[in-house]
Image 1: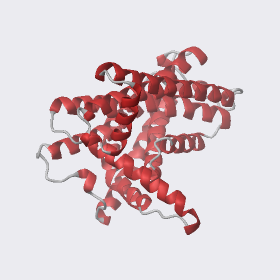
Image 2: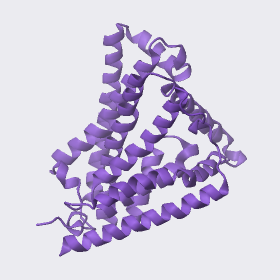
Image 3: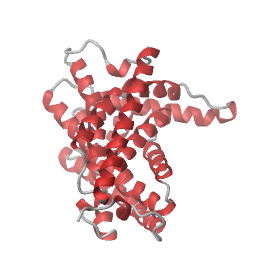
Length: 319
């Protein structure tokens, strides 16, 4: 018997909000364990004491390029913290609190293979369209009364920008593969399992409105990255992943789209670093309006096609 998306995403389930509080507890514990284990890993591999670790972490935040083997250290920290903060708590919650299996993330047992191709095209074609939101969001200013908050936000944004630039400052293929695993695959798995597979479903169960559930979970997804001048485009991207999950019936489609989005950018930066490409995608601040307009038209067109295929598959599943 085929799974029904109406059975798996039945709205107005009592206790859905309460279980989200339990999920928050899992995440907080996971973050604490992840940070402790990351520090213990540093102490073990580098054979340094607690005081030296604090000094090392401060230097990594400010001038990571001056730290010997700083790139490898940052990858170790990123991978450990992300695994224990997102992926592991989500799976433990899913298995032991929800009492579900991995297959239960699926809304339906089958999704049309064409959706996978359309999902990849959607992510790539929407880049110029999304760049306009990046441009608008990065130009955001707050009222004078909030100048202190704005200064803190800018400082945080600049700090994360330095870290991002450092993490992509390599020319080795082996480093590219490590980065592909740590900053692309792990986030695609952990963040989609958490924000789409659990939070989006739980919000829909509580509120009964899939669109509200998708955008609220996307807003939480964007906010948790603490990049205020990229909040809007990341939220819209999260919403796209949410609709891909809902329309395709497969969380793996959302994971795939997330992987393609981050992986494509990482690949373009790597090809620029090894001088295969002459254009650095990270330095492109604005695109021609005609390109943005064409991207927008094609983006909504592909979304319409995915929705149409998903609705058709849903009818077939019910019958």
